[in-house]
Image 1 (cartoon, rainbow, N blue to C red):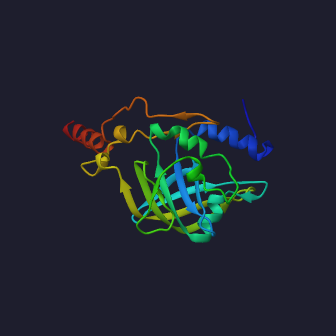
Image 2: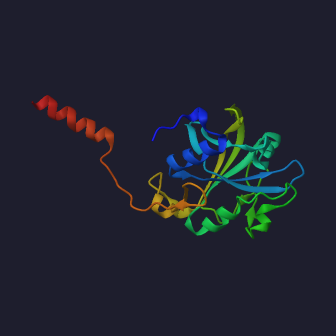
Length: 211
């Protein structure tokens, strides 16, 4: 099958891309509106873009030219919290994608408890194993739909105590969920550990020298 991207509508392209670029990590984001109403929403167009300072990027789209509450809130206050949800939270994450009116506190609707953040105004979800307090550093717009890529600097990291081993996250203990296409999600499944590239390269060079 051959597909010409220019012949696709934004919706058709979205369905194909979200089925091909998988699995995707989920940024579960809390923000505050200009009136102080809390908002919670998941975004799977999400990755980190810099280790120092640590920075994350989230792409937020629009419908009929109207941006989601998350994008409006971040641009207005320039503060937000990105959570990584684990498998027990999958139903809450899925339900948080419901589009409520801006005046509705979605966190309260989901029955989740929040705790204050250290350096930003939006609260964090208490039960989430990872919470990253962020400040907006840059907003870029892409494509005909003007999707907004929001890049933020992590100013504080909250981790569940058992997650860090020798300075690294124990991914199995984190047990994160990932997005597939449509209302489908994935968990880690089998983890395959390969020999680190640096060690492989060193071994190869040594063998070539011995010859």
